[in-house]
Length: 614
Image (cartoon, rainbow, N blue to C red; front, side, top):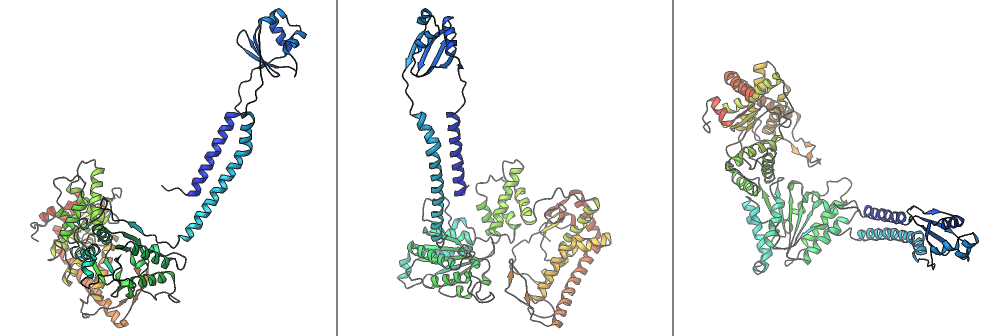
């Protein structure tokens, strides 16, 4: 943990004061003082044979009695003790038996030096130390002002012994992307081969893809494979509240990279500074646009032999400024797709290394249950499986742990404290049974993998459907079947209980959204192959907040009618299925109420379908 310098200096000063207080307490610690007696009493004690020894040190007299007790007294200056005792009537014979010793007075140096240090010099030293500390912090702050325009990029050197080095082997899938980047690596290793042929390597490589597909991982793999200095920085680190700082940092970054050439500059989240210029109000002279302008100038100013390649990553390529994407800047664009079933299997194997896996773990089955998952999602699945096994005090990670972790990643953890009443449990069971029954009754739908009425996240229950294979394209028939499946829960509630509940709200929202896309975006309605509406580029909190209507009010009315027709048709189909197969619906719901969960094999056995034959 990094401690603030001011706090650190304050702690040091407090410790010094505590030490000084300790020294004072030791030096001036009150001690038990000897008894004080008068000289006349000493004379009486000598005459009574009680005194064994008398030590004289200047005007101080220390008396030691025969019982080894001590006492102190004082005499007048320049007086002789035997004479004083004789004048007071001491018995000379008994006085001779007493051992009298005189010590020369030697004043210790510490008797005056220590008080002088504690009271005079030490406070001055403490004040001087405090002033020096304050001046040091001031000078440091002044130095930071001059370093304010320095690049904040993290530099990873070309260390072949780095154990954390990432290579292409650590990035499963992404075959085409790795082939493109292999050429970049080869150029960084053997630039003369390309320059001799008059070839120009791309100056900028833009990695496009949704969150979690492995953009940053691929950039690190390029650095690991090429063994060259790798300058990594986020787009947001260029922009500060002070005008001109971002562009100065860009200049410093590119200047440093050119000195270390061949090298790689990696800018993560390029959209933070690369958004389309001119979208602001009142001109485009803000700090972000100045930073973008400097990046454009630096990239276009590269020389052929510079040996510096810029790699950038973003999941918002649609909002980037066109000047960034023209040839000569980011002239190579690599699109990273979500992994298919084979890539997901390989990714799971990579993220499961180091975990004690049981013999029943089959990554192929896990990969089949995770369509649409990104590499980051799969890493989360593997980690959640290990956490689940550890919580249950297992010594190995089993297949059931992986399957449970998939549901946890998708829907959230089980809400065991969310107890349903008997009536609510029955309604939920019929609702989920309706989804499953409608889905299994329509050809071409995805097979039902699991039905549960155990609450997860915001869902009171769920019907888990997973396609047998990855689908890149879908038809209108599939979309209509999906809408009918979504409305199957509501249809089952109406059939059994005579009315619907709020549990169907999320289903209605999804069905309406899907129907609207069918009509307005995909041209799959009776209105013809026309896309209605143009999305505005105005974005707030990551979401589009406006849409430009390029159609009339009469067309808008037709769109609403078409959406209603689709929803009503899907509802009619769902109602017909649950009414026709009511006995099957009640059978599924009864099993759900008893067991709370039905897996695919048991579900297909209930509805009388052989596994995989539907």
